[in-house]
Image (cartoon, rainbow, N blue to C red; front, side, top):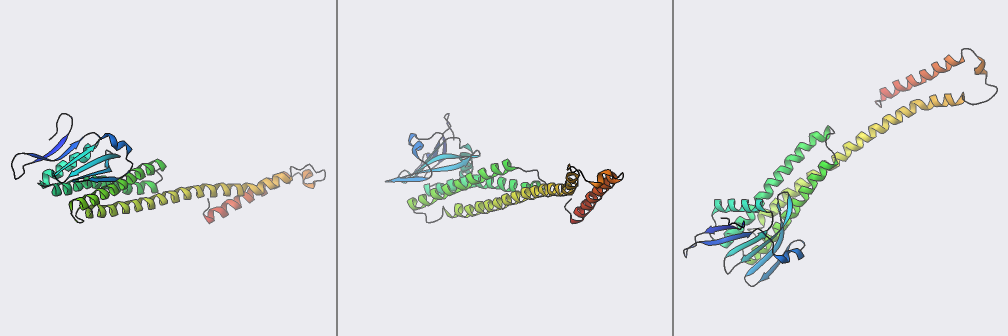
Length: 274
């Protein structure tokens, strides 16, 4: 259910009768959230308040979750986290939890489902990047975008594990909440490792292209070095240079220079440098 202000509420019918709101999400942040950097938890009596970040809409969003053991409810706060809220509601409609402990588990699973879809997209991007990379179609900007998405997802998973661990201790649930996110964190780390390998492959390809260019420039320079030497010798202003007075000296020198250049080109081609 959503009201005019966008507040979401998961309703259920408790055994005592009537309709209760097991989970309510407020589409804004409390004023004191601006002072929080990173994940943090505060426990006061029967209320546990956890500040963490969720990945929604392609970015990390600040999020607050308040677990009230006495009232048996969960209240969350967050701006522009519609993707997460929608997924949690869908998970709740599927599982239909009727207690706070059950819903907190649904809450964690719903957020993890969003992350799983994001990881699947990133995996597809990584796989599609490999053949394009080998063809030289990918650049540094593409890797930067993928890396930022993967890094933000990794941070969000760590924050979700933090929330799960604190909720487990507060509700006495053992490790039932954190086992899933912890396993998922391993999947994200694996993708991150694959991406770093791909990044190294990218620089290897770039380095190989640079080496080829340098090799060709070196070969071209090597061809012209002996020709430049000959031209330099006959460009000197010595008075007694017998070749200057021989009628066939000029064509002989040109023929020799062409022969030297041709021999070098043939040699470099056989070596595979050209």
